[in-house]
Length: 335
Length: 88
Image 1 (cartoon, chains in turn purple, orange):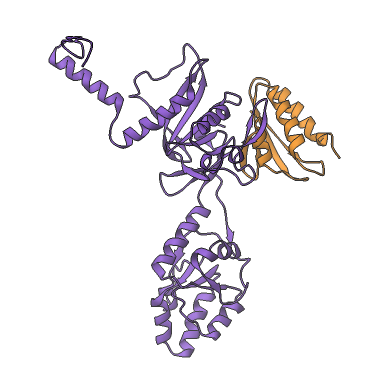
Image 2: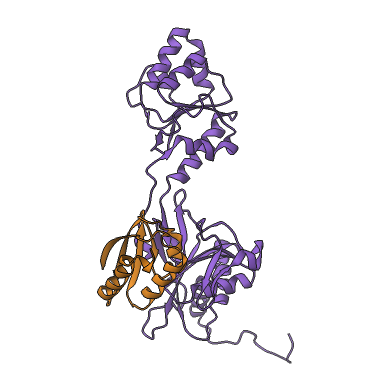
């Protein structure tokens, strides 16, 4: 499947139980009413502080989001009489909210916990302050609901640059990946690369839990990169920074000669530099892959070799000097 | 481009041996071959890809072929699925 028209897979929902278990260590939270409401589904990646709903204004109440009670909501509740507190709480739980998180380990009356339990809604309590919890939780939900897809290719970290090698089956992607690992670079995934769009403009690639760092080499079978080369030869995930497409050499193929016209390829809506590389016997793709990574770094640090060369030519043409040697006069064979 | 939905028939599912048989068969054809399961699509000519599916008995998947010999490729591959990879 062509890289441009990958089918996006987006999770429709996660359960409250999954949210709770996945973030137990990070958010140090506990459940105030056991596993009540753990099977409820969260379908919205956003979070909401229901201040206005507590005060009784429920028009436009984003009830389908994870609800957060920070200090403001708790103090508002506490300034109310007991009856009004119950009423305010009931107002919120009349809606089908997925779950409610109380920050700063703020306590809740047991009557209020009872209301949540009666409505089958999970109440979670975290020691984190609201800003921190919102940040972590938002990041987790963004990741869970991020568009994903599978790419058939090899994904390697070369000098810290994430290079995704793609090309037809049998063109030699795995062999190049193996060669790069041998030269000290790190394999992220071979053959099956899960790509996830994280935030706008960032594409993260990772392997799958079944395959991890296994690889198939034609005529050899499966090999385990981690066992053979050790921990330095692998990593779990990496930002995809360059797509290198390996193509069979064709005399009439269109390949760039200057590097001024490198295109981009859109993967899950993220624009990524795209290099088309013709391969033929005797061409060392591994070294070229290393050079691609280093050239990418140079550009990242503000030096574009193709532009530099072109502007040097422009300057020479403008000054009307012609074809001079780099050094005017060599007295002897030393500099 | 043609496609067909198939179901895994044998008890052990699409484990290593049938996965190898499948990719070897697919490699005999020029057509591109993709397998889509639960929305994720892998290259049917890649054994690592096929094994990633971890397809159990009863699992449904869509086979997609495109290329000059797509009809022959689909007939051969679908037949392999129908035979349950020659397993129980």
